[in-house]
Length: 136
Length: 291
Ligand SMILES: C[S@@+](CC[C@H](N)C(=O)[O-])C[C@H]1O[C@@H](n2cnc3c(N)ncnc32)[C@H](O)[C@@H]1O
Image 1 (cartoon, rainbow over the protein chains, first blue to last red):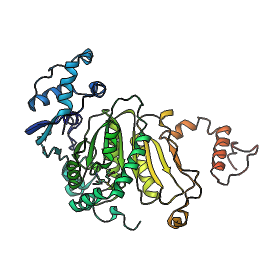
Image 2 (cartoon, each protein chain N blue to C red):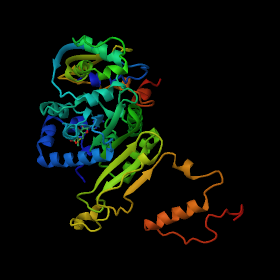
Image 3 (cartoon, each protein chain N blue to C red):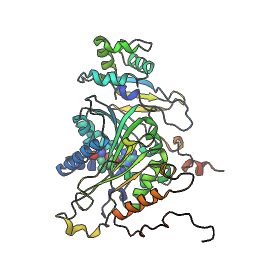
């Protein structure tokens, strides 16, 4: 899983108000080369939550991104774009977990795939199974 | 159609290691899925500016549909409920990121960040109640609601699907509309039992020119070579349904339906081959209270 995906994912657990960003527990990080496409990352820039990306990449061992949200003008800097590209698309969380910031629930990551399946009592479907089960 | 996989077992059981491998190594399936994905991407109608977009592939399986997205140069995130299918995707080194998840639980994604979504041969699975706690309506609601939220305004979602019957298509479509999507069903080659394929084409946001349902392929091919085998097919006359959630509000003025609206509507019904009473001076006149 790349940080691009981490930056989009949030915890979907019933009752959680702000499930973003998921905290990363990194056991194994791998770097996979991806073709540099400035158009894509420039287009993504406005959608990225910068703080979440900078923090996540630091946890993954890459501390080159500025902490504070950079001004739009940085998109003219090739050096910046290269770093942004690396953090967004080349760092992979291979083994570890994503942790819900509100409940502390761990979503394990195996072979790069986060398991985001919810247990029955975590689901947000107003009147499902849980309601019949928990009815007195 | 007696062998619908949806009726045999829940998807995460049906698509086990053996089935996942069998599915992905069949050159027939690989070919069909590529074709369906190409058509879905075409219907997605992304801006033609050469900029790669971030797309979702819902029910991505072993990555056959995702591969078509990569070939088009876009980035994608794939979601699937079957770990076996995702493991095959890993082996095949697909380029998208993979998530193990259940679309019926809703997508846990930030609002407005996704540029478009496709789903190939997967959404009909949501209509099954595989566990005692599964209520298809709630799962459809959770799915479409969360999809609507994570897509950018004006973004599209295109689902190729195999509804079991008309009621199932209606059910799926109605939950999409309720979530706020505009759009409808595109049926390619409606008269051919072999080539016939259905796509749900949805747009996020209020109806406009861009939310109009695109036209289908092969609608005029009235007699196809495989016509003999169409015995089990219903005779579809309506190939496209174009719907917007707020249609009623658009068309009905405070005074009620205008004469020109009624005439237009009747003309449309005629063109579809329906029997419609002739237009007279009484058409669309208000009736007396005691008629
Ligand atoms: C026929 S396969 C299609 C896979 C891929 N889109 C392709 O074109 O090859 C259907 C896929 O939908 C997945 N699926 C079914 N129900 C699902 C659900 N509730 N959430 C996520 N994926 C689901 C299955 O696991 C399976 O991989």
